[in-house]
Image 1 (cartoon, rainbow, N blue to C red):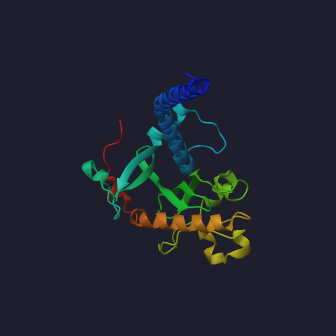
Image 2 (cartoon, one colour; image 1 turned 120 degrees about the vertical axis):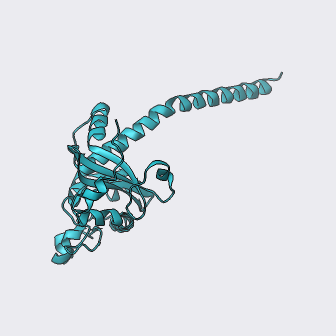
Image 3 (tube, rainbow, N blue to C red; image 1 turned 90 degrees about the vertical axis):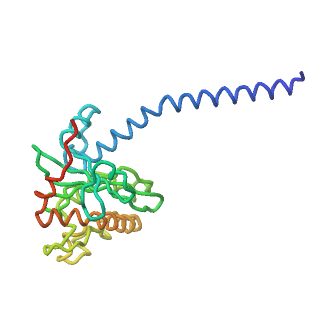
Length: 244
């Protein structure tokens, strides 16, 4: 066998061995990766709900204990009806997270799926029991430019959302929008409850996220209406048993 043939054979064997090792490593690490993704999702849900202090490092065990005790995962249909059993697999079902304290619902969290400037933006928006006041906001995934659109994940931007209203005093849905600059400088006073401060140099990110939030919240409006009309007591009676 010539030297070149030996080199080619060695290269081929090396490629096969490396491929097998990478495949084995990927398969072996998949459960850990999936676990980390789950913990990260739970952590961001808790952050949006205001159940984790921003900036404080929280271990996996604490995250899971807090999530199990304070968050309830549900699925609802487009009319806001809770789905149970086989109905949970309905393609039009929507995930919903209830915030609970001592067995009572204190608010709810909806996932936000939005287009961004460079890729999708995923987040969670928490709303108080009144069905219109924002409790918190947390971004879980984005591809925006660091220092510009990437500021959407920073604490100062998250604080913007607390106390804002997704509906008017009369209960009409209006969502929450991101202003171009400071709310006080460019938004009429009557509309300020429905706007948050924008990010300098990231106008397009703000526009995309504003549209995505409005679209996501509109799909959960039947749930919000139940809360705004104080019909949650009857709705709570239909809740499935809590997780053990």
